[in-house]
Image (cartoon, rainbow, N blue to C red):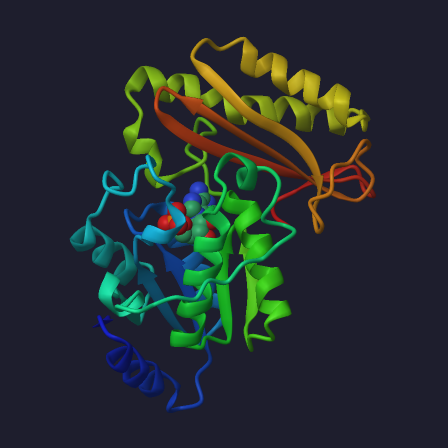
Length: 290
Ligand code: AMP
C-alpha cells in the first residue's frame, strides 16, 4: 500500500494506478478506523479495480466546543486496517495541504443540509461539503463510497456531486453494527461501559420502529411515539431528534409511503451519537441503505 501526503504525490500515485486503464474507488474517512470503514473499502475493492482511502480530521466540520481536539487519531493502526481491507493508496493530507494560507472558499448545499444534524450542528455540512469537494477533485475517483451511518451526509454529498457536475458516482453502503446492535463509530470509544449500555437505546428504538412498521403501522407519529418511549425508558439518554424524513428530499413525512429515513440523534453523557434505518413504504420492507 502506498502513502501520499501532498497533492502532487497523490496525483502521481493515482495516475500510476490508472495507467493500465483501472477504475478507481475512493473512501474518505477521518481515521480511527473500524469495521464500518473497512466494509466501505472492501466494497470499493469489489466495485472498482483500485482503492484509494483518505484519513483527514477536517477542522471545518467541527463547531466551536465540539470534539475536534479530542477526536481520536491513530494513523499507525489505520494504515494496517487499510492495508488489510485492500486499499492500494492511502492519502493523509495535512491541514496546510487542505487549507493553505489565504483559503477563502466554502461549498454549501442549501436544502438537505438544513434539518436533522443541520439544526443541531449549524455549519457542519458546509465543512463536510467543502472538504469532500476538495478530496473528490484531488483524487478524481470513478466512484466514492459513503456509509449509511451518516445518511444525511451521504445525501448532501450525492446532491453536491450532481449539482456541481462532479464526474463521480456516489455509492451508499449499509451500517455495520456491533453484535449487540450499536452502530460502529469512532466516537464509541468516548463511552464508558455504562454509557455504552445506555447507547443501545438508539438501535433498540429503531428496531422497535422497524418491528411495528413490519406489522403494518405507517403513521410516523405513532411510530415515533413507540421509538421515543424506548429511548425514554433508558436514563441518561438525552434525545436530540427522532424524525421521519423522505429518503431523497429529507422533507418530513406523516405516513411511510415511499423510501423513508428514520434518523435519531442523542447524547449519552458528553458523547453525541447518531443512528438510522430506512423504511420502504411501497413494499413494507426495511432497507439496508438509501
Ligand atoms: P468518518 O471517519 O466517521 O468520517 O466516516 C467515514 C465514512 O465511514 C463515512 O462515509 C461514514 O458514513 C462511514 N461509516 C462510519 N461508521 C460506519 C458504520 N458503522 N457502518 C458503515 N459505514 C460507516
